[in-house]
Image 1: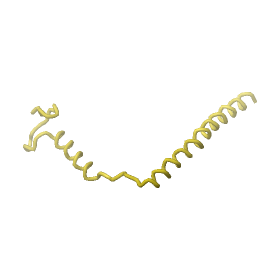
Image 2: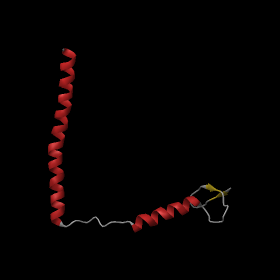
Image 3: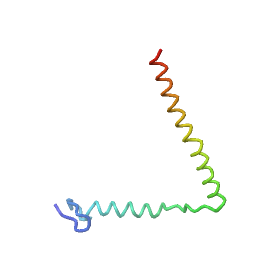
Image 4: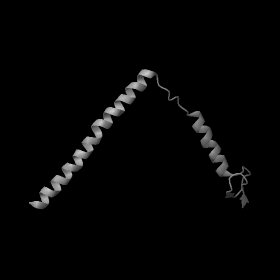
Length: 81
């Protein structure tokens, strides 16, 4: 078995290609760079996204708390009957 000085992995060098772990990391890095997407928005789209996120938060959190209270109320109602 050989030892890779770069990543510290042990590997069998059957076909002389070198460390498979380093080769896989390099392949994944190259694929990520090739698939990079531009995530920038214009000002209007960013404003709409922020507003939508706040509306979802303002409606979602009280609705979630209400559902929890409803479940607790129904459990107490069933146990008391």
